[in-house]
Image: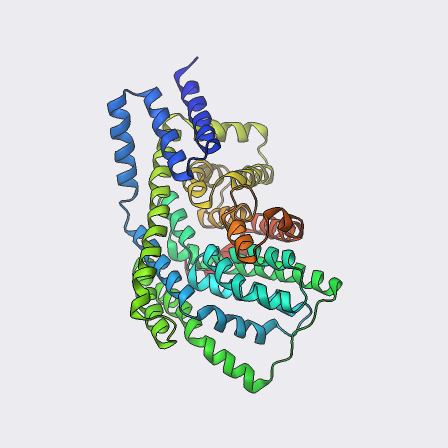
Length: 434
């Protein structure tokens, strides 16, 4: 047996084995990469190479934005911002059929866009909207399903940590351009989920939300303005060239901290707990990034990207067929792998194919990957947002799977549209000169 074939078999088998016995994903990735190196090298070079790749992989100025945005998200989660955004969403869409379902989606879009975290959105919005929807007569599994799927919209709408990770994996695609590109696809996904939720609510005859008067509506809008203004500061500052995405993340922390104190939802005594949560989350994300970069190097050493590329191109030379196959592979990967390692591992594999063979812009492909892997966050057995949403709603996963299906269809429909029409993704970046 050829050594490269042996290495590939060891890589795949060891990764599956570690996951099967319950080893956390980050450790499974690192151990499978190290095991493959031990087969290909001597022990000492294998350990040294893995350590070197992990260390150099984290040596990126852009990655500094991730802990700052995580801290900003933690401050928002504790700072009373979620309730203000929900009240503002009620002003916008609460009066339509299935008003609270639409409010759930809109609030998740706003909160996710500000915090950049799907998990934080599912937790913060779900814990508030779940009881309200139950009191109004909504089925609990439907409420959980719409909360889980809409929580992922904030990963496309900037600022988004996963877009920063994609920039790293792609070799330096502009973070600002990626942020600009995420707006329309993220909003389209939210609108598609609202359409499905509205139709379902109309058929079930769920109550329509109360019409909010002009005076009350203005008051709720003004209450939400300080929270929404963070988007203007962060994105506006990046686009105008006042600061980089990394610098913007630090500014976001300062702004959120001031806002939390102004709202009187966070005190000095709460900061240690918030900082500890931030450190824990950052540690998990950084370990995933480090081990995934090590695994990517091993895959490149074993010539796996080129093998997959040749395999795809041998099936068909039609760009749409190749994109379809890539999307199907990513959908399958999303069932079993968290988004961060999936982006880090599969971007170096698929990006050369779509850019050199299909002529796709790397910015456009990044958005395709994010929209695709968002679906995986909502599916068992590894869907982290699904677990959080079910935990918040106090439901079993099997109770939520059936009502999730229409929302999956809506997300896949948007994915297909974005894949086939690059101009939708590239409109805003080109408008701002990227």
